[in-house]
Length: 291
Image (cartoon, rainbow, N blue to C red; front, side):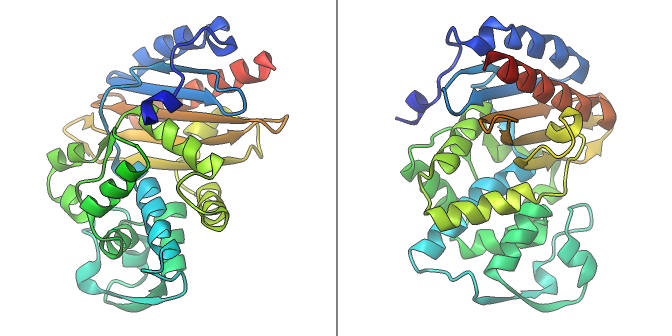
């Protein structure tokens, strides 16, 4: 089962180096809930902090949506090159991030499925996400795809439009840090998608231009990180989601998964992002020292 794929809290080198204790200390700065899952892919060494708790994903959910869309391509229901017309009625509201909406506010423009995937993953475009979610069969179908992989602790339940309509709706799209780390491991190891689909999704995640001060924030310049961020609006001083999850390529070619979710925080954006960056750097240092 999926849970067995995730090695949690074992007496590994990551733990011997005190990584979990470092994560716990850093987490206090967030002034909110923090969940973390870290895994060194080549060895299975791992650690977690609140790794089995539920956190709102926000745009991190575009990563599993991307996998589900590519699965539909593989089974012939969709084609990467087929054109999809995006109308004004498809655009997400102004409070949601969407370069497509900003560039084409009147709609009536066509994109290929491949282009929409790039917008959704690399630019975290909410309009592209909702269009692809519909093409993939809706939230229920995406969650069914995850269940077919044995993934139980990720739920895709709503669209970007629905999340923009009510602050509470985002809690319906939830995941545990351990489950996201496990899905990233599946992607890296080529389970659930073909080699071609895997390479395309990892390319778009590596090209992502969001969250430069999160996982990447304290890593050496030029470090390759295939990741997906997620961010909610701040309402009355409360930010319900500041997230980043991805695969870091270490200097020696090994790969480190880091998934950090900061939820229900009263800290400012610089502090929330710094928490993610510090945790990622601590994980990096532990992994490099463990070799």
